[in-house]
Amino acid sequence: MELTALPVELLDAILAPLAPSSTSLAAVARSCAALNPSATRLLYRHLSLSEYARNLQVIRLLAARPDLAAQVRTFSVHLNDAEPAALPTYTDLQRALLRMTNLTSLALYVDASASWILSPPHAESGQKDSILHPEPPCYPRLEHLTCNFPLDPHLAAFLGQLPSLISLQLASLFSDAEVESEPEPAPVQSSHIPRLEAYTGPARVLPALASRPLRAVHLSGDLTLDLVPSTSAPSAEEAMPHLRQPGAPPTYIPREADADTGALLQVMSAITSAPPAPLLEALALAYPNLVCLRLMTTRALWDLPDLAFYSRIADTLATLPHLTAFELSGMHWQSRRKAAEPPTAAEKEWISPPVSPRAAELPPPDLEDGEPHDYDFDGAFLDWSY
Image 1 (cartoon, rainbow, N blue to C red):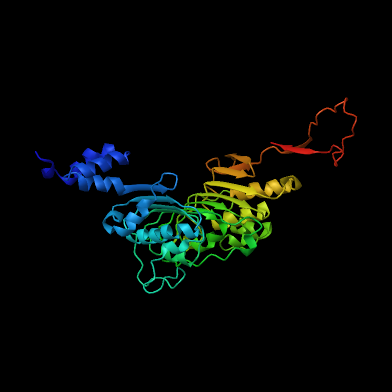
Image 2 (image 1 turned 90 degrees about the vertical axis):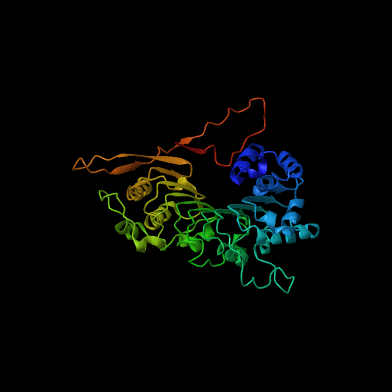
């Protein structure tokens, strides 16, 4: 039987073992006309381009060949800063992205100021910051997006073209000293990225994603109280009456009204400069079904190791019926079933890690060294162990 008589699916399966070797696939595509279409599909299906790999010229090829761009499923590119010498490559990348409408995964490790590549070229002007194209392309299969762009109008408009996006990862571009000058995230329409389940990136973007069915978020930057949905720094007396009371049924039935309150969120990790106890109470109100929670605080916890502080934390954790793992600044809290009446009541209590101050063991003085040692604190160093 001739190769031309075989089904396309069978030809693809025959060449599948060669997929890791682009050299072999290229040789097959050049040597056999019958296998050329299948070899070409496999050759351009998964692309990882970088200056180190010396294959950035593929970007220009994809920009000029829409038929090849349509074959790409996963695309990753690493480019240096948008220097004048690299601008033609960025322009080609903009045109190539316009044609890769069958993508399932996209990773752009490029200059953070070049978010204009996500917008189609303007029909009449070469300005990259011009008005967005009235009919941008749609990427119905794109499920995973990674980039180091801020959430600006270009990225926000691009998210509107991703109806199937599940995972979004943005880089944190600003240091603590620059966070005050960081521009506000662009608004994202409520109808955009309706299936988003995982977000990794700056905490300031969290309010823009409030209506999405997020299940896992890993936040960089500072998670402040004003970024948590529907909260304004509650006190213990204000928050506790609204939290689930101990002994209440842990079974949660999602309601339509809970769509904007993070009822589906299960995993969260964040860094915060806010007081830990009020923030935790706000998170318990906003995300009642947390399973794993990890908070890193920039505050010195040795200023707060009193019984009231840890009791407040434990009481808040007890209101989260599904929580199984909690970490606060490296301290892992444990839970156990609480003895309650009636015995059938499944209720947990959380136990803080044993934290106690002790004098640090200083090295013995060097008797041969006649110079005095001044430690400024008269040797009263505290080492918090747990």
